[in-house]
Image (tube, rainbow, N blue to C red; front, side):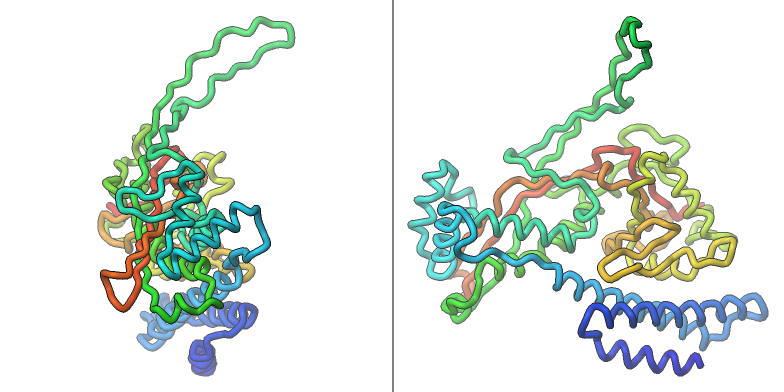
Length: 416
């Protein structure tokens, strides 16, 4: 029976799943087969040691689950990707900007675009030159990044018009007190404030176009530029939001000082040790995940998520709780997230693998814990000279980020 399931799996993987519903059904079927084979592996371990063939099947099924989930995510993203409005759907000034921008993209004619930006009292060219994309294009880029950038999708995102956002935060919580209806209102203790600074840094991409593409009037250049840069921006952002050092890039939440959660203080990220120098403990490994959940205060748990990469998720997929139930569960519907111990799992490939002194798992309310700062304006500079016969479009936006509430994120550290 197991061989039959594996043969079916090979066929489904090759077919590729043309629609979301079919791909989702294949994914769930593969997970059921995975559970059957993993249960067999666990029973063999209890008796005499796992059969190498069974271990290989489980690993193949786990890899296939990852590949099918990746394909399903691509299908859902493609369907959900917002389109860009065409002519006749906006104010006259917006249409003028769109027409002028398209003329600049196609032929390099910047006269109308320069006149519009001067009329709006904005700077036509920055230190690297270029012009602002239309507002609807910028909004579409932001929506697409939110859909494919893992940390941005769960963090708080704020737009600013300056280079730095300075945000006060009450370290000791709000100053409050209880009083009777007619009683005097005594002065409350002063809050302890910490000013957090989130500078923005320049993120760039440089898609190239052929003359044929630019001459084709049917091609929507706004949609093209948004589609070309979304993946490049999302990959760079994803790395910075996790591991960035804050120098000419956002500061990642793993870059902040880490301390044992029992000794946690403001400005540090608390962690729990696994008790095993090479991974999770061999006895009741899922208990460490439950401990991490309850290391977070109740107010943060309501909107908490797990953050880890696919390899770590594959390892946790094999674990059961003390009642024999798998703690990892597949998404309930296409486009939703897998669940681990009742909380959604966010896949961030920039998270470290399970290894000595690594922190492969984060858990917390990232909407309260991490802030992404976008400076308004995406610029494009047309360059027809550097890579003839191609035309390069040097596209830039300014992004910052960092932890805004150090209580809202906890880590699991591989350490004895």
